[in-house]
Amino acid sequence: MNKDVLNEYPRPDEATADRLLTEEIQSYKGKMVVLDDDPTGTQTVHGVSVYTRWDYDSIKEGFEEPGALFYILTNSRALSAAESAALHKEIARTIHRISMETGTPYLIISRSDSTLRGHYPLETEVLKNTYEECTGRTIDGEILCPFFKEGGRFTVDNIHYVLSGNELIPAARTEFARDSTFGYASSDLRQYVEEKTEGRYLAGGVICVPLDLLRSADTLGVESLLLSASDFQKIIVNAADYCDLKVFCTALYRAMKKGKRFLFRSAASLVKVMAGIPDRPLLCRGELYRPSGHGGLILIGSYTGKTTAQLGMLEGMDGIELLEFNSDLIVEPEALEAERQRILSLASTCIREGRHAVIYTKRKKLIFDNDTKETVLMRSVSISDALQSFAVQIDTAPSFLIAKGGITSSDIATKALHIRHAVVLGQVAPGIPAWETGPDSRYPGIPYIIFPGNVGEADTLKHVISFFCQ
Image (cartoon, rainbow, N blue to C red; front, side):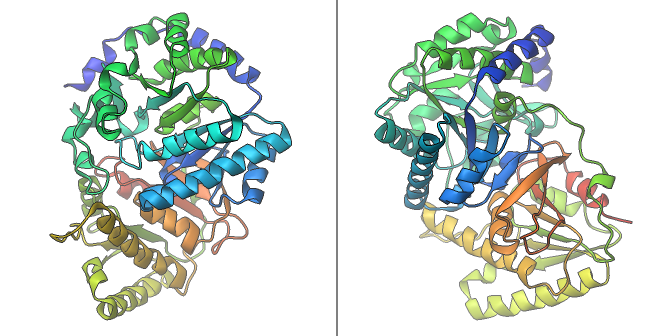
């Protein structure tokens, strides 16, 4: 389907939509806690805190901030199902405890992949059950909103699409749906729900918020749909632009005022609208460039075709050294360590001499005949561990760091950089956030750019790196 179809829908009066939504946001006095299953979820916000730990003190600090929104980086997409379940139960209990101590109500948003990968429905079911155990109250509905404009993800007539060039491709026909751990077969989100819940929630029981209601700014109609939800009923939000989310969120706040309770499984765009984060221009070179005489470090773990195409555009770029790390040696520990030391020496020299080192893994995922979903995931985590070790052991502090891929970027943030608390500066390109590392991190004050594996055009990585070239 050609992307021009997105322009065929009439638009609401956006000034009115903005005003009504602002009124509702201002009347909400609680906290929004975003549990982000990899660091890429900050790709629509700025001036917002991210915590990489979920201990009592970190979450309490988030509640005590003046803003209404903060993120907790769980990196749960790199965990087993059992590990993710335990983590979400612990976090939900701690959030509720702090809410009771501070008298502050809260909403939990489970931010996950805009191409539908991740531990779903596990994570939101654990959050629901824990909330209900703690409060004795029930969650009426689960809102599903994978729309993410900056990454070209749109939901129209309940079908979720990924923009590729000028064409909208049903999500189940993309490489993301073939993910060896989190794959799926359905682009229709009603069928996706039935597929992922193994028939516990049937497609016919899903509530769908259609574009015609949103584009006619029929907040009463949307509110009526939300008020009808019960028993953790699934609610799909169709969205082709931000105006759709503004109308939806206005109705959502009104439904919550009337006592309805919801959990959220969304991509990054819904978070921005619910919290009223204003637009800001993309970050410019002057906001990021920190001249130090040292080169930068770019670590690429994502296997997607999009990432591979972006990597190919770096060939021949001045001031860049491409270093292929033979990640297939993960099954041979001694050979892997020799390979790691080889790359580490080359990268350290490169950065020390003022050139940018690009370390990338093998472009084809290592798969064996007897693999399970979890063994594939654990191998990816082991490769990510090896990749992030370069950020720990280089002998010269880099002037900036770019991480490509969700597991890679999370491991680097927590294991390599030791970030406990960072602030999102903004985006260097649509859907690509930049954090400023805190004073307690390994390399204080450098820009840390989190580049999702499934975002950008072929030349986007080259464009981002050019920010740091002389």
